Image 1 (cartoon, rainbow, N blue to C red):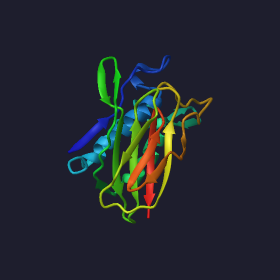
Image 2 (cartoon, rainbow, N blue to C red):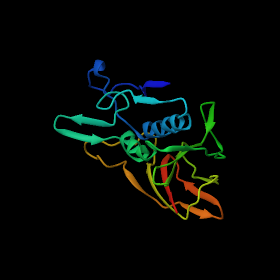
Image 3 (cartoon, rainbow, N blue to C red):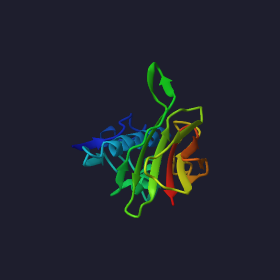
Image 4 (spheres, rainbow, N blue to C red):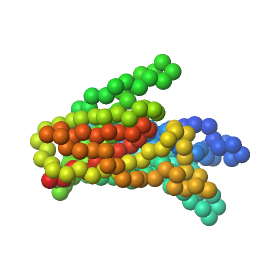
Length: 202
């Protein structure tokens, strides 16, 4: 299965040519990107290729430009974090999550995917869609022997936060210190509106 041109399609930016589909890219887009990539990862037995609709200035772009200026979008930073899953082996992961309900639509607040790379390092990506609540998740990965965990994340205070040409680093990859080992369990406290990628090593 090939998933072609996935991504968010919203209204164009005011004052831009509507035919060019120039759109801002917010924290909401980052959460959708992380969730979508987790879905693709978890169905890697069938999804052999998936293409973001656009990469520069159109729809859910990784990069926005303005004459000689360029900024990296929140979606870019999620792609940067998720590259650790590329060419890795899918690991099944089960996460118990509370529901998140908006306008009568209910989805699990947290989604995840996991993989092991060629050197044996395990990576787990979590997305917390909840806009106000931090959520603590725990999971035991069968057959995974690990001793240390490090993390990185993309997060911001509001769904509508974005990187602008005046403030290009409002949303960026930062260190995540909210994960630890408890017995054979991995326990992580995910901030609201966050995409977190953990690295587990022996």
